Amino acid sequence: LFQEEGINQHNFEKKVTGLKKHRLVEPMDRLEDRMCKKHNRLLELFCQTEQECVCLLCTEGDHKSHPVVPLKEEYEVKSALLGKIEADVQQMIQERKLKIKEIKDTVEYRRSHT
Image (tube, rainbow, N blue to C red; front, side):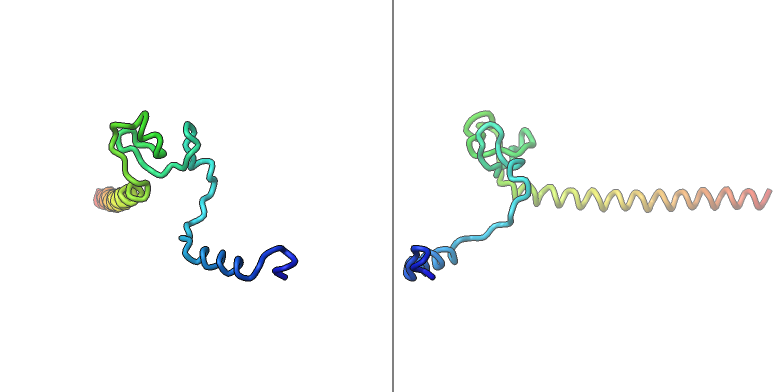
């Protein structure tokens, strides 16, 4: 099999060993959406001033003096913030439902006692 495809056993094992050291990453959906339109490089940083994703070359140009962080770091911060906002909204919903029930109970009480 190896001779038919022009691959010798030694080179094959060497490539497989090299691949074992390769770090796997999550596959990306719509890779073109994650590329810098200006530099055609992967957007891997987040500009905190402009609140947008940037590539490494962007940080040497338009975003030179802006604070940037790795996307994963900003994602974790934003996710935590979103979780807090969601919890706050759920709390507000529960408070409003309670208020509506109190109003309905008051209206019902007044109807039955008039």
